[in-house]
Amino acid sequence: MRKTLAVAAISAAILLVIVGLTLLTVWLATRKDALDYVGDIRVVELDEKYTSVIDKTDSYLGHPDFVVNDEGKLIVAYPAGHGKGAIIMKESSDFGDTWSERISDLPQSFEKSQETPTLYNLGGGRLLLVSGCPSWAADDEYYADGFNYALSADGGKTWPQFENAYGIEWADAQPDKGDPAYDGVSEESLPNFDENGKALPYDVIVAMSSLTQLRDEDGNLIDKWMGTFHDYDFYNYVSYLTFDDDGNAVWSAPKKFLHSQRNAEQAANLCEIEIFRAPAPNDDTLILIGRGNSRTTNSLICVSTDEGETWSELKELPLCLTGDRHKAEYDLATGKVLISFRLCLPGMRSSAFSAQNLLGGYWVGWVGDPQELIDYATGDTDKSAAFGDALIVLGATNDGGTDCGYSGTACKDGTFVLSSYGKFADGAANPFIMQAKFNLADVLGL
Image (cartoon, rainbow, N blue to C red):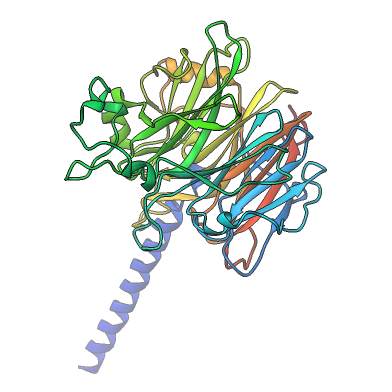
């Protein structure tokens, strides 16, 4: 009897070892990293000598953006928290070689920022900071209230208090649904209403994810800017920024500008749109790239040749350009465009045993020719085919998580400066603000 039990125990142990080795073999054979899925595009990991820390504390810092003023000074802004939190600002007079201490005399209203700030240079010394006011499901302190903005008239030396657009005060002043004031107003331009027909404030997420200067019929740039944002229903809106005779900002009523492609927009949960103008000779073309938040599609692209009035059919991008919060900047020295974003690949698994359905962990920059993007958006190129010159790995999170990658971008005389947030160092418990500064000649040999 004892002999039989011993043989059974040994047999069971051998079986367990075989099963364990088999599972280990399968795991090793199927183990994948997000970069393994991006296709045959050249992948280059940025040397640490090109990176530096802008700000790091014991608490969470995230979602930076920055702008270059007319004097060449860089100004970075980011929230003290995940999205919501007091806006922090620093500045650099040497294009990112050194950064100031945190600016201490910011407006009091910046302390109650509800979302990630975005920054833009409008020319003539004017800098614009925008912060959305979305509702946060887990925090009753924050509620839908349009978006806040502040316009500096002196290149960011001083900032006024926030002004609000299309929030609660605006909604309270609007007629109820069915009022004759809405006669002739297109469906995509109507306000949103509650069940009683009362106009609702806009629930603005990533306010002015892009702000694109427009041109007149003769092709001249004018002081009119197309800004984009989205809401929790993943409608994407445009609001046009112009200025009255006294120089005051005027935002047009938000409009659902992808209304004709609502099925595709909704299926992808398209959001965080970036719109940028192609360089000459194709500078009549606007390129749109957006995040697919449903995680059932890749990122999407389309183009417009009529200043954003109409758009080509939305099309899925290859995995080498799939992720969140794309930000584009041109390098006049090489003619290339660099698109910074958070790499997030839907439907991809780290191994055969992983329940995870999304891979990331990297802040990256896609480098390629602008014409490639236009040709892809308007042609028959298969989304399975990678394109572009290279994918630069700008930062990798220490836990493989996707909480990283929103960035500020700038380029001067062939040198890129980019800032982002993430756990980009071993042992980092919270995301911090990191900078990458390089030129494509050094990193890619272009």
